[in-house]
Length: 363
Image (tube, rainbow, N blue to C red; front, side, top):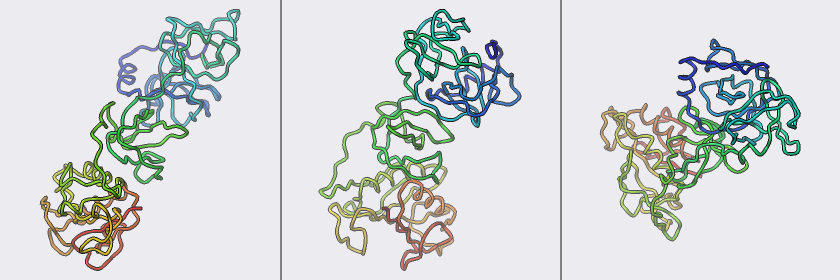
């Protein structure tokens, strides 16, 4: 019976311990591959995963998946796996006998311990087909829990957290998540978390998620236009606008707050935020736009660490830091246009009188 040897050693234990279990979901083998004791090609071979077999994927390290392989956990190259269904079950018996066919009369192939995860590939009466020992095998359904919860339950802790198609700010935007929404994280990659939503998966920044209760706060008051007000200051930002001019759509205001959180630290000055809109929208003194809650003025960044005004012509102006800030705007907000007269600073358009601030408009 291939692939049922027990492998011991500190290297294996360390490899398992260093990988967070962000949940269990089904993966099907699309290319035959060796299963190893650690996430590296030189580690001990534990067995072979064959095309068509399905395993519960528990965590990821680089381009390796940690899977439940028979009675133990092991590693396989991610390129060998494709997404399968989500019928992941947990063994509820102390020892569950695995058989060659759907019935007690069939030969026993081995045992699974309590808590082991299996992927149900088919049903035959009261028996369930799984992958075990390099072949199709069967276990009795009464010793499997209800469908295993897939993923770690977390809560969105910021308003308007962007949901994307992939693990990166350059990937397609799918929508936004409300503060307080509970989501299941099934994978982490860099600073991004993959979350399972009804009907689809998506990615959001990991720092937008927290333990349950992290997103709870009193509802923010809204104007008659449905606008919310940006605070005078917050993490990573400060407003130089009058109190009456700090109102905007929730998408705009929450986006500015997210940008501030990502911007803060590193010896950089806070982001200086100017006018957005009036509480009720409409004409705003000093502006031809800023009527719909979707426009905002922001100061360029200085190179001396001071949160003060600056123009693009002064020696204290930092093009590099301003470019970085503009990159956060593009990452966090559905930008329609940015007016700014330093076209080397990012995806901007020149416009008269935009030497001392950039004007961003969102969709």
